[in-house]
Image (cartoon, rainbow, N blue to C red):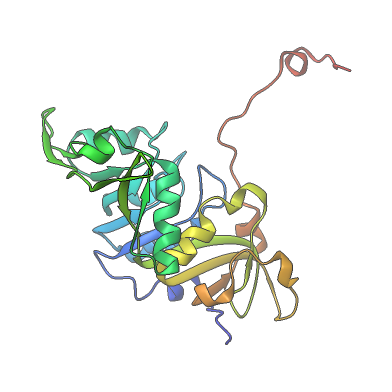
Length: 260
């Protein structure tokens, strides 16, 4: 039952080229940066990534993206990641963009053993009708487009069929974890981490604080250990290395005045 692995490199040692990964995080919150860096150090390539976005501020998945290690992304947000947009438009990267709620449910469904489900999200758009560019040809044309999906009517409303997602591995980050793999996530860092943990056939968690079995309140556990196969404990330096995506300074702070 002790799922603790000594190092991040050891934890990802069996991730092969071409593997599919579900990765937790949203922007800079709850991103398993240490495990991602370990994959980068190993030189793993041709990865298929399922994640809300593909890194930000040259951190997280952006590290693998910039190194050309990612072949396909299933996500819901490109945002300000210029390299992500460049590779996509240049035809270097296959991208399946889907509604954010649909992505969340596809991961949850896959982890729960549900092969597919119907949702109204995307009905009447290219999400359902097909034609979304998955890969460009580098000259502005579409080399590969999404296929049409099944649409059915229930009680007078149309719904599109979406398939659950299962991946070879999942990488997640938690505030606390025990040796059995039970995880507690902190506030917004919950984001896609529980869903990614469910979807991976082998889920690897990096935890900021490792506690002994019994050290977690069962009612506070967000990811039961049944979904987690490996745990690595971060060093204090790794746990505290958290970036800020957008720094803002109020007018009062800039002029040295204090607002009451």
